[in-house]
Length: 556
Image 1 (spheres, rainbow, N blue to C red):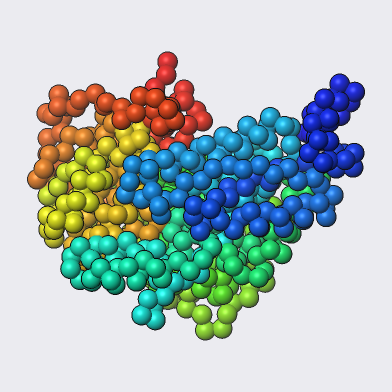
Image 2: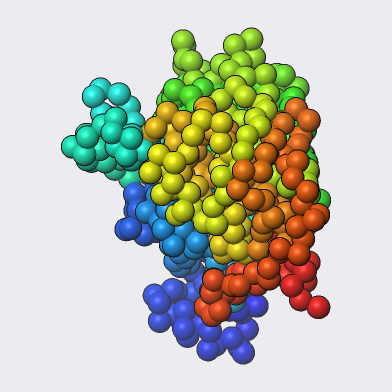
């Protein structure tokens, strides 16, 4: 066992002495030592219940003959930080969680890992940490929140942000805004639509790093505690069997994960996160995979933000096994290993589909002929960008640029009713390095939706979007403005063309004649974690990771 290095032999008496002081006895020290990484926090409903769930995980570890070693990591919740300077910390927190998994697990020579996750960056971070260490382990998602209710209609956090826009437009009064605010989130769990958390929970199950069906179970469902107990048991078995995280991560399993996310019209953040997991696992997987997969994969999940249903509805309908079975029958998936020891297709051989369900439809009733992602290039995005296609029927848009240097300025323009139908909103200097932190533009997209403009305008940015965003939006533009990207040369009124079929994002402006206008980027932070992140982070087209600084063009 890896932990023998830390605890076995006369010369390790000092280490054993420390362990005894925690209450461990000889039997516990002789067993596989399993890290339980807990991203619990009481600042957000997404993670607030993880402390209780961790006790069930540890019980499962003990029953299987292992010794749990719990430690905490961090989380930054997008729902609270959205639209503020704090949102710059969100994507960076993914790297910190992955780093903490590596440092504590490696630092104590632990044998295996269970990562307890909730809010959305903690989910890919868990996979990144496991991939980086190449250690036996799995990821346990705390589950979705249940729907709220307003006027008898199920609602989510998405509805709150749209209500802000509706209030600014005078479509609802302040009292109704407050009522929506108070009734949208009824308890523990992550945001209930096919936003980033539930998208990545589905992706990790398909990738093989989470036990089949566990992530589907809502946070407050009585089956959750038993499922995480079994996950704890399985973590010990993975150590005993010598099955490591990288055994699950391959080009084929990454393609499977990309397929299920685009088929359910999931968050474009999954592009960043799957690229990052691939980098950590040493697997060659690039951004063009997402476009190729999306073009041949119809949308079969009628899920918010663009559809009607929420994650608990998908669970009741048949969950991840149903999605995978549909896609398997269509020949769009490859059979790959999973942490259960069974293959992906074996895990989904018996699907319990709810009679009459409309959440996951058949291919004959597909909601769109192609999936929710598009990857575009052109003189505004030489290294690529990501289009979110779910929620609208348009694949091309041409209009004048309305240029903003940050999210706050764009949001204020929307609130002031300065944006007109036909405009293309350009938000720059919000990339991984420029922000830093690549903030999500949910405040802007939701305000547009609240004013009924989501189908009337387009938005392009070197930042990114919440999984709750919808409309004709293009993010992850690379290179970003802060690193000399041509989006930094756009002027107010320049005509911009978006064409998904041709995979083009371009302007007819003569950008080459403006290269002298490009000014060196002035870092927003010169010390602290955000300064370090801005210096190290790679392009969005490479997953915005910090693990390989020599590849980012910042260091000799």
